[in-house]
Amino acid sequence: MKISVSTLPFYPQPLEDVLNRLVELDVQYCEIINEYPHQFLENDLFDSYDLKTSIHTPLSDINLASHNQAMRNSSISEIKKSMETASQLGSEIVVVHPGHMPILGRRFTDKILQYNRDSLKECSQHARELGVTMCVENMPDIEGLLYKDLGELKSLILDIDAYITLDVGHAHNNRYSVKDMLKCSRIRHIHLSDNDGSYDSHNALGNKGVNGKGIDFISLFNGLKNIKYNGILVVEVEEIHSVEESLLYLKKILN
Image (tube, rainbow, N blue to C red; front, side, top):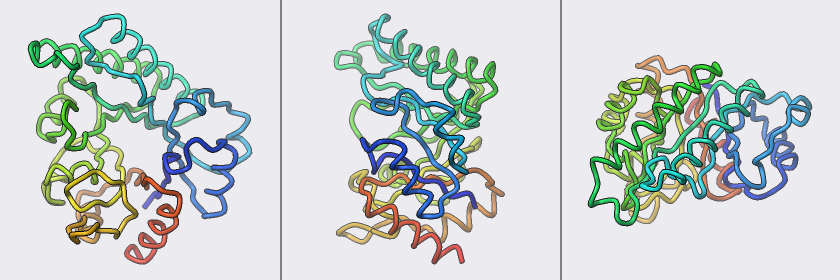
């Protein structure tokens, strides 16, 4: 399997330092969160490393479902810029978060969902024009976030002609079993972390939390083999020490 590591736990270290550490850990893939201080990514830096990359579009101050058209357009523009960066770097996969419900948006739920759908459709079209694959990520159980429900996300993805980043930690936080997570079609990319189901804590893999109700990764990997998943598996944990713990855990259970 293709094991990648997100830059999330290293944030905001200089990207060169992060890449050097990943080389030391014998990692061949890296997912870069494309926002400050890593908003400008140059080919020259990556040419020095034998690392394949995926790009996670910006998280901060982005809302594709904003009721404010100027903010919505700005968010779309930032996502498109990130896709263009991915294309320039030769990164096939671009991860995108769906929008979230504005503070007063519940009074206009249908309109907010339409804004979100239209924004994502525009971004999906841009991705196809660039030759990159847009993968929309399912969200954790946090009030206001859209597309926590995998069934709703699947319907959206088919509508806008895109793909899914399955975040197994988010799905577990929303009480999905491994079996039900993998029923979702169009999974092209996967984020890995662990939690006890109560909160999206981005623990090291195998760290099941205080109540021991963590993710059954053995069942997950068996299920991925059954559906012939051949994409990237990104370790997306909160702390730096959790990266090495997760890689050791993966080596143990995959061998």
